[in-house]
Length: 189
Length: 335
Figure 1 (cartoon, rainbow over the protein chains, first blue to last red):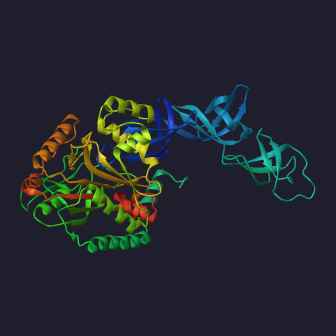
Figure 2 (cartoon, each protein chain N blue to C red):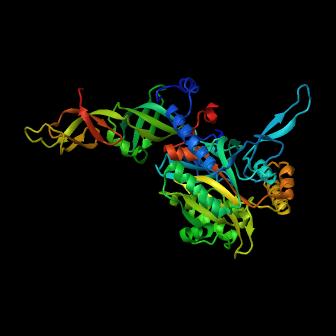
Figure 3 (cartoon, each protein chain N blue to C red):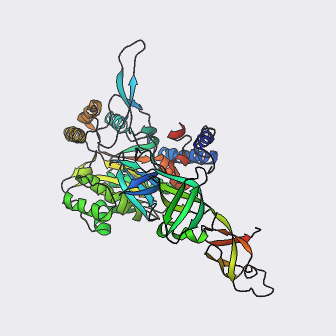
């Protein structure tokens, strides 16, 4: 991969910082009237999620990171590794539990997801923004309650626990926003 | 946009790029504010003048870079290197030396490489000079202008030394360069710190001080370190000596820079020479010294103070804009 100069760097670009792949969040040009020019670059580490802001001299370069996103399907986990398949190439990839991280609670077999590869190796997996999943466990709701106020915890077939309105029952299918782990609506299969 | 290919995105951007960067509403409000500014100077009977944008010389400041241009006579085979001005300071002082009296100018200025949220390589500068004023008198007039245009509260005032001592616990005049470098390293996440006094002071100002000052009303910082005197008089009578320079900051923006103007042509030549040596040492392209300007100082510049104020940034403050492009008809990427 090549390098990017500070003046080419835009939000969304992927670079290597301290050996880790990072995504650019913001790049601000800083120059006092009579002083040297700098760029204050904010990045998010794609491995740890940590956000760092660092000041570079204008004209310095950052190494580009070979990071790509693939449309993939979650296949299964064997107790140690989670297995995925690229939808386009049918190539299979596996990741350990730590790398799958929080996303695992949204993954049921055959589910769509996005695999992020760094130098061809899976770095992270992201669930779609909205998923449709079945409730496998929740307390019966109070009779007559039809509002969304209050709510109760419900365990989903993929393992996640979300708050649902009292009227939603065990065995029902619901649509969930995975970014905030929030119930959206009842859904059909 | 998310589902478009890069090519589609480019097409999408291209088909909108003919449009202005600023809204028409912003341009109308900008025009009204410009009228208020001109009225401010008319009431004070300060003469509006114009000076050339294109000059045979440029400024020697190591980090103020002119954009070169080429002039060619019809039919000629050779070209003359010229520069778009970085500010109208030298020709305005030549007018002062020629007996113009107090003057102001609103003109375009150009800076090589400066591009960002608060920078456009071409921008509008308001510059004015007042006979018989020192930097503190002119600071008061800048304050009055800001209150007139922005309807803000009167500015606070603090010396450069008080600012660094209060907020960082550092004396900017007496701390060693090593101490300044250490402070930068300890407080700023930065790749490399140059062994350079002014760069360290600038970093401390932009990173550690600017976010904490001028949030509710403008702040005037005055009496600068002599290493940042630029074209200001140095007062050797102070201990330590200070440069009669001021800057104005408001809501995260460096807005204005003013001097009690240096009149001594020998000292001015020496400062230009030091700038050029610095440029050579740091591999920054050199520029011809403006001999017309030095000759004017030699002939006699009246005692005066001058200030340059970024009009686009002033408009950003007045219109609560996030980016300089929001107050310009066509920012550089659309120019």
